[in-house]
Image 1: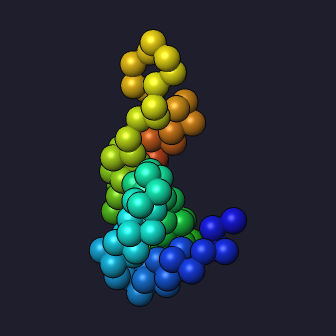
Image 2: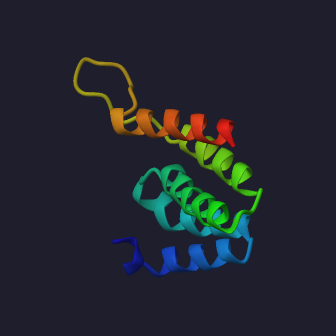
Length: 106
């Protein structure tokens, strides 16, 4: 689980302090060297933020949901199978659509 990683704990702490740019930087610096799609992880951070803000009744939840959708859209497509073009995995496509519809509805 992500809770095992110090960089994730730090990113969550920064998000709770509304230090979002710093939280994003922590995630990118931890994941980029391994070629891992860090925008998807940033989207997850904003997903958690959205749910927390909604539970608090905070109107900033809409902006957080929009940021989750935007970050997810930056996630690069998966490497293609032999002989096929670049494509996003179905799970990522479903996430993008769900979050876009969610934040638009707020």
